[in-house]
Image (tube, rainbow over the protein chains, first blue to last red):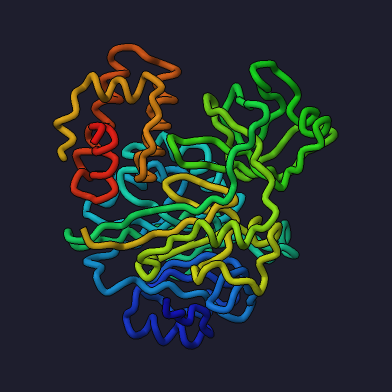
Length: 331
Length: 78
């Protein structure tokens, strides 16, 4: 596969925007703020998988340019008041790209309720949760940008609805190196981003105490089988005082979870699962900051697939510790 | 293959009886999970009909896509 350049200086990106290109951008706030109005959306993050491997850059912007085959494109912002319409708004064949600021009300709304939105999963929705440098968590707010009026937004999602010709289609896929282990079956009595209790093989227990008593490595996610798709929920924190377990994505009532099997070699595990065919058809990809951190991906390549490293991945709904990619193929 | 060739009783079996097909299309996997969760809470006849209509609508809309054709083959046992 021909490796293409993906990181650019703000001045180079400004030139692309002025030339009328339609772009999806990822970079530090100070860089995105320099860009002129145009057909672009962006989100804040300084971590990337690039052609030369995992990279941290606070001086360059990751650029994804829409392919020439695109027939139309509409950029829109959503708040909690209208985010539930995100699957209904576009009518044409195509896909939508969404960026949501981490920790915002729209993030929580999407995390908890996206599977219940009208027309859920009836159109590919790919995207990511914007973040900050890890040293800036809690001090610098994650932001998104709507290029039509490029002001930083901390309380809205930005979406690019993209149309494709009828002889092509967008296929949204994931790479998840985690698989459910063979241990206890874990369920929750309510959906949420945190839990105090869980049903362990049908018996109610304090979940934090269960994790501590069983010396569970919380770098490994919970994994659920969604009719063949393995979907993770990552642990954020276990509060020993309140005995509450916090997650980076919701656990859902009625879903059976297992703790993931341990992974010893992330990069090899990942590369084994990467698509072998049509890699050039990958239009957009992103991977999780937890994979970047726990697997020490800085400087390492992941099969030539590039994209922002994010605070959450979106493939129809919010995912964790997963690589998401969108391919555009001929029917 | 056409989604309309699958009977409502077949859709009902997919949604209510735990047969696990190895579906390929991610949207199918998510949608089925959501519909099964819905039916766990409420399996009244009207809810079952709503869920059958929803999955039929999806497969009919995308039946010309190669991965959806693969999933239709799985349902039809080919």
